[in-house]
Length: 176
Image (cartoon, rainbow, N blue to C red; front, side):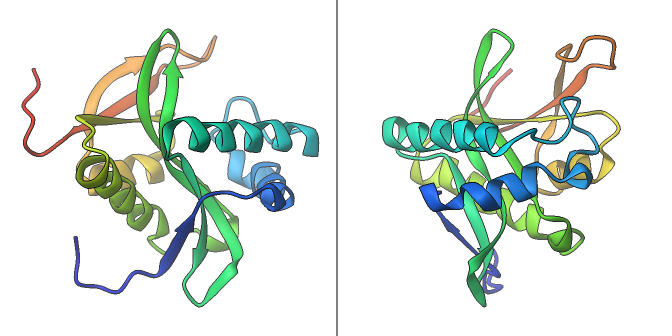
Protein backbone atom coordinates (compact mmCIF):
# COMPACT_ATOMS: atom_id res chain seq x y z
CA UNK A 1 0.00 0.00 0.00
CA UNK A 2 1.06 3.56 -0.62
CA UNK A 3 1.68 6.34 1.88
CA UNK A 4 -0.53 8.62 -0.22
CA UNK A 5 -3.79 9.53 1.49
CA UNK A 6 -6.75 7.79 -0.11
CA UNK A 7 -8.92 9.96 -2.32
CA UNK A 8 -11.89 7.61 -2.36
CA UNK A 9 -14.30 6.13 0.14
CA UNK A 10 -15.88 2.70 -0.25
CA UNK A 11 -19.05 1.41 1.31
CA UNK A 12 -21.57 -1.37 0.88
CA UNK A 13 -24.26 -0.33 -1.61
CA UNK A 14 -27.58 0.70 -0.15
CA UNK A 15 -31.11 0.41 -1.56
CA UNK A 16 -31.14 4.19 -2.01
CA UNK A 17 -28.23 3.91 -4.53
CA UNK A 18 -30.48 2.55 -7.28
CA UNK A 19 -30.96 5.91 -9.05
CA UNK A 20 -27.23 6.61 -9.11
CA UNK A 21 -26.53 3.04 -10.24
CA UNK A 22 -28.92 3.52 -13.15
CA UNK A 23 -27.44 6.93 -14.01
CA UNK A 24 -23.94 5.45 -14.30
CA UNK A 25 -24.85 2.11 -15.89
CA UNK A 26 -27.47 3.61 -18.17
CA UNK A 27 -25.06 6.17 -19.63
CA UNK A 28 -24.03 5.20 -23.19
CA UNK A 29 -20.54 6.63 -22.61
CA UNK A 30 -19.85 4.31 -19.68
CA UNK A 31 -20.86 1.37 -21.87
CA UNK A 32 -18.69 1.99 -24.92
CA UNK A 33 -17.06 -1.43 -24.50
CA UNK A 34 -20.04 -3.26 -23.04
CA UNK A 35 -21.52 -5.58 -25.68
CA UNK A 36 -24.89 -5.40 -23.91
CA UNK A 37 -24.96 -1.62 -24.13
CA UNK A 38 -26.36 0.75 -21.53
CA UNK A 39 -28.65 -0.49 -18.80
CA UNK A 40 -32.19 -0.31 -20.16
CA UNK A 41 -34.29 0.65 -17.14
CA UNK A 42 -34.47 1.45 -13.47
CA UNK A 43 -35.95 -2.02 -12.96
CA UNK A 44 -32.78 -3.61 -14.37
CA UNK A 45 -30.72 -1.41 -12.05
CA UNK A 46 -32.84 -2.57 -9.12
CA UNK A 47 -32.24 -6.23 -10.01
CA UNK A 48 -28.48 -5.66 -10.22
CA UNK A 49 -28.46 -3.80 -6.91
CA UNK A 50 -30.51 -6.58 -5.30
CA UNK A 51 -27.94 -9.09 -6.60
CA UNK A 52 -25.10 -7.06 -5.09
CA UNK A 53 -26.90 -6.77 -1.76
CA UNK A 54 -27.46 -10.54 -1.77
CA UNK A 55 -23.74 -11.08 -2.42
CA UNK A 56 -22.90 -8.87 0.55
CA UNK A 57 -25.37 -10.80 2.71
CA UNK A 58 -24.04 -14.22 1.72
CA UNK A 59 -20.34 -13.53 1.00
CA UNK A 60 -19.62 -10.64 3.38
CA UNK A 61 -18.13 -8.58 0.57
CA UNK A 62 -18.98 -7.40 -2.94
CA UNK A 63 -18.98 -4.33 -5.09
CA UNK A 64 -18.71 -1.02 -3.28
CA UNK A 65 -20.40 2.29 -3.85
CA UNK A 66 -17.49 4.69 -4.40
CA UNK A 67 -17.26 8.40 -3.62
CA UNK A 68 -14.55 11.02 -3.28
CA UNK A 69 -13.38 11.60 0.30
CA UNK A 70 -14.40 15.26 0.10
CA UNK A 71 -17.90 14.40 -1.19
CA UNK A 72 -18.90 11.10 0.47
CA UNK A 73 -22.56 11.39 -0.52
CA UNK A 74 -21.83 11.81 -4.25
CA UNK A 75 -21.38 8.30 -5.66
CA UNK A 76 -19.00 8.43 -8.64
CA UNK A 77 -18.86 4.73 -9.35
CA UNK A 78 -19.29 1.14 -8.28
CA UNK A 79 -16.69 -1.58 -8.17
CA UNK A 80 -14.58 -4.01 -6.23
CA UNK A 81 -14.41 -7.78 -6.11
CA UNK A 82 -17.22 -10.32 -6.18
CA UNK A 83 -17.86 -13.86 -7.39
CA UNK A 84 -18.79 -13.97 -11.07
CA UNK A 85 -19.43 -16.74 -13.56
CA UNK A 86 -17.00 -16.78 -16.47
CA UNK A 87 -19.36 -18.89 -18.55
CA UNK A 88 -19.29 -22.11 -16.48
CA UNK A 89 -16.35 -21.26 -14.20
CA UNK A 90 -16.85 -19.32 -10.95
CA UNK A 91 -14.12 -16.71 -10.34
CA UNK A 92 -13.48 -13.82 -8.01
CA UNK A 93 -13.74 -10.91 -10.40
CA UNK A 94 -12.38 -7.38 -10.07
CA UNK A 95 -14.57 -4.88 -11.85
CA UNK A 96 -15.67 -1.28 -11.82
CA UNK A 97 -17.69 1.36 -13.59
CA UNK A 98 -17.22 5.07 -12.98
CA UNK A 99 -19.30 8.06 -14.03
CA UNK A 100 -17.76 9.94 -16.95
CA UNK A 101 -16.80 12.92 -14.78
CA UNK A 102 -14.56 10.60 -12.72
CA UNK A 103 -12.57 9.30 -15.70
CA UNK A 104 -8.89 10.00 -16.21
CA UNK A 105 -8.06 10.69 -12.57
CA UNK A 106 -6.58 7.34 -11.55
CA UNK A 107 -9.63 6.29 -9.55
CA UNK A 108 -9.89 2.87 -11.21
CA UNK A 109 -6.28 2.13 -10.30
CA UNK A 110 -6.85 3.27 -6.72
CA UNK A 111 -9.99 1.14 -6.48
CA UNK A 112 -8.17 -1.86 -7.96
CA UNK A 113 -5.40 -1.63 -5.37
CA UNK A 114 -7.92 -1.38 -2.52
CA UNK A 115 -9.93 -4.31 -3.87
CA UNK A 116 -6.80 -6.46 -4.13
CA UNK A 117 -5.80 -5.51 -0.59
CA UNK A 118 -9.22 -6.67 0.60
CA UNK A 119 -8.94 -9.89 -1.42
CA UNK A 120 -5.47 -10.86 -0.25
CA UNK A 121 -4.91 -9.19 3.12
CA UNK A 122 -8.40 -9.37 4.62
CA UNK A 123 -10.20 -12.24 2.90
CA UNK A 124 -7.15 -14.41 2.26
CA UNK A 125 -8.18 -15.19 -1.31
CA UNK A 126 -5.66 -16.97 -3.52
CA UNK A 127 -6.35 -15.26 -6.85
CA UNK A 128 -8.41 -12.53 -8.46
CA UNK A 129 -9.38 -12.22 -12.11
CA UNK A 130 -10.35 -9.33 -14.36
CA UNK A 131 -12.37 -9.64 -17.56
CA UNK A 132 -11.93 -6.94 -20.19
CA UNK A 133 -12.87 -6.42 -23.83
CA UNK A 134 -9.73 -6.45 -26.01
CA UNK A 135 -10.34 -2.95 -27.37
CA UNK A 136 -10.71 -1.37 -23.91
CA UNK A 137 -7.11 -0.19 -23.63
CA UNK A 138 -7.70 2.08 -20.61
CA UNK A 139 -8.99 -0.81 -18.49
CA UNK A 140 -6.21 -3.08 -19.73
CA UNK A 141 -3.70 -0.45 -18.53
CA UNK A 142 -5.41 -0.30 -15.13
CA UNK A 143 -5.22 -4.08 -14.72
CA UNK A 144 -1.54 -4.05 -15.69
CA UNK A 145 -0.77 -1.16 -13.30
CA UNK A 146 -2.17 -3.10 -10.35
CA UNK A 147 -0.08 -6.14 -11.22
CA UNK A 148 -2.57 -8.30 -13.08
CA UNK A 149 -1.22 -10.29 -16.01
CA UNK A 150 -2.82 -11.81 -19.10
CA UNK A 151 -4.03 -15.30 -18.24
CA UNK A 152 -6.49 -16.51 -20.87
CA UNK A 153 -9.24 -15.46 -23.24
CA UNK A 154 -12.96 -16.05 -22.87
CA UNK A 155 -15.22 -16.40 -25.90
CA UNK A 156 -18.16 -14.77 -24.16
CA UNK A 157 -19.64 -12.47 -26.82
CA UNK A 158 -20.99 -14.15 -29.94
CA UNK A 159 -19.52 -12.75 -33.13
CA UNK A 160 -16.89 -10.66 -31.32
CA UNK A 161 -13.26 -11.13 -30.40
CA UNK A 162 -12.88 -13.03 -27.10
CA UNK A 163 -12.59 -11.07 -23.87
CA UNK A 164 -9.19 -10.98 -22.22
CA UNK A 165 -8.85 -12.61 -18.81
CA UNK A 166 -6.26 -11.15 -16.45
CA UNK A 167 -5.18 -12.72 -13.16
CA UNK A 168 -3.18 -11.88 -10.09
CA UNK A 169 -2.27 -14.40 -7.41
CA UNK A 170 -1.81 -13.82 -3.71
CA UNK A 171 1.84 -12.75 -3.31
CA UNK A 172 2.69 -15.82 -1.20
CA UNK A 173 0.91 -18.32 -3.45
CA UNK A 174 2.58 -19.93 -6.45
CA UNK A 175 0.39 -21.12 -9.31
CA UNK A 176 1.25 -22.82 -12.55
